[in-house]
Image 1 (cartoon, one colour):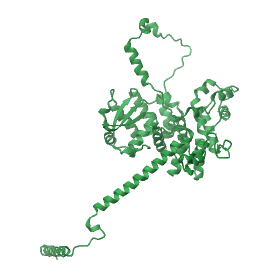
Image 2 (cartoon, one colour; image 1 turned 30 degrees about the vertical axis):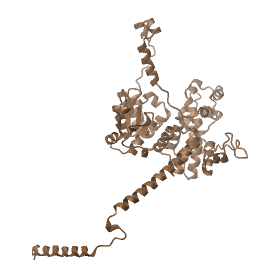
Image 3 (cartoon, one colour; image 1 turned 180 degrees about the horizontal axis):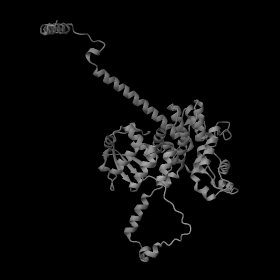
Image 4 (cartoon, one colour; image 1 turned 45 degrees about the vertical axis):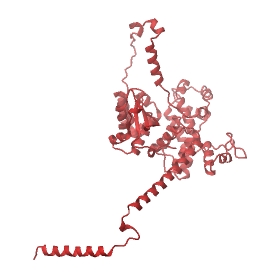
Length: 465
């Protein structure tokens, strides 16, 4: 079942912990770098959770969500949206469990990125710039830029560690148990970010071959390796092969310095794919009987329970890159891909949470099933978090999630309508019922009483001229 705010209750418990201590400098970066992107409610939620983080969290010592809702003065829908924003920006990890005390959430706060890491992250820096504009972006950049001074002609005379301190070689060779144990605890808490994307999807881009192609150019291969994530993300997003990617790199390189302008690199790719759709249907890999190289066809999908329509959608999700799929759907509705949608899609691909085919099903659900005009960041983040928590890895998983959710939604709607009818029937007063007849005796008594009241009023009323 897809988790949404409707599956939450204010009485659900929660416990807060931190994988690293959040400092005042972290809060400053949160206010200036993250808040313009995620909004004040999400920022306030982070601050509240930070204040409730416990060094020794206990599930039995949980609090209820209604306390958070009351302090923030929001409802569950707004809370869920704020929480999803924190999760999507890497500031929060959420875990849930049912125990004897009911449902409980564990919220693990994470530190905001250092300023240098934030501004060198293409997705975060673009999102911030879109939110605040050129002038404010320059001001914030200057605020976090470290002061520099050219040291030409200076000679460094700094002392090294061993110049000043002496450490026992015996203790270094045979470290005390307390040091080894504490080291283990810190190393255990230092976890790599979770990636649910299949490794073969990343391996679809032959980076070694790509490097070989660039050896004939004059660009820095070390810098190319440093930009590996960006290049692979562009490949996954647009379906660009190694040869074409090398051409984009060459076009964005400055011939005088041999340095690649990666902003220009991204802009050239986006411009080309906004102007011309390359529909990458796998017609050549399909046999006459309708099977592709993965032995997946309409017939095989129907045999495992998918409808004709869903089977066609699954095959289409495998055949298109996310950008091509989005552009094709938007044009079929008479629309176009906006800049914000391109950035949003790039962000989703670069997170490496889903395969391209799963992203395509997500796009189809929002634009076709929900009949929305554009991809909304908040809604995409919410759905992506839901599917990530549900371990959606294939387009078949995604279709099942969508259909199950729609079925559950219909059942809930019918149940609510039935409940409303019962309440209405039970609470109707006698006079509102179809077979109601006013008792004549009571009516005559009421009329007589009314006449007596009028007579008394006329007797006591002041005589005016």
